[in-house]
Image 1 (cartoon, helix red, strand yellow):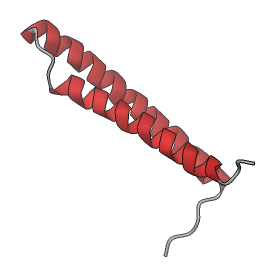
Image 2 (cartoon, helix red, strand yellow):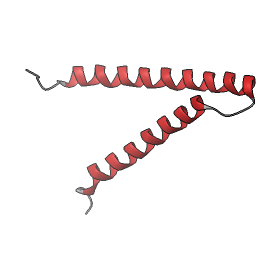
Image 3 (tube, rainbow, N blue to C red):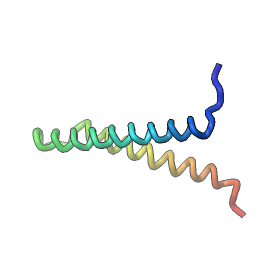
Image 4 (cartoon, helix red, strand yellow):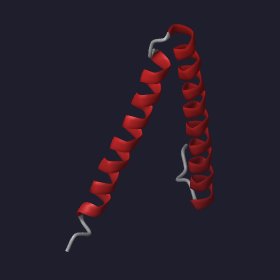
Length: 73
């Protein structure tokens, strides 16, 4: 039913994911600034933007540690 992705499919998927991540980050940043200018408060868009980046950096850190854990000599 599902086949394992080859290198090209993995590259396309990774690039598409990056583009989507940058788009949502920029959209949330612009929304945050607009919301702050309108209400003078930090609102939901900023919370979403910060949480998105926290999840990204933490998952990247955890995955790197898992991958490199067996390579230490």
